[in-house]
Image (tube, rainbow, N blue to C red; front, side):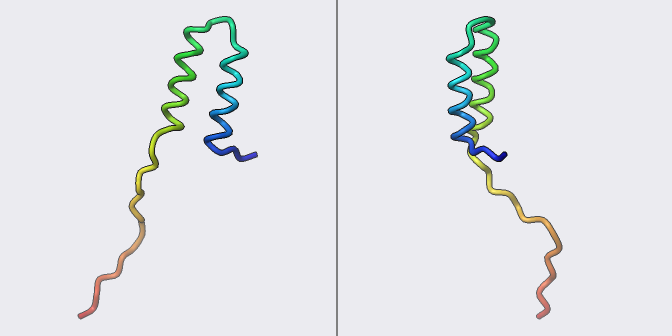
Amino acid sequence: MLLTNKEILLKLEQMEKDVKENKQDIAIIFQALKRLLDQPKSKRRMIGFKPMDED
């Protein structure tokens, strides 16, 4: 079951509404999760062998 970041954020928001106990601690956890999911994807460098040009 693969979920997109949008689906995960929606589920987190639903869970946030349902939570009543330990509100402050759980709010911190949700904030951290949202920050991790909202991070821009960095361009990754390709790995592997690059042959030298033969001139």
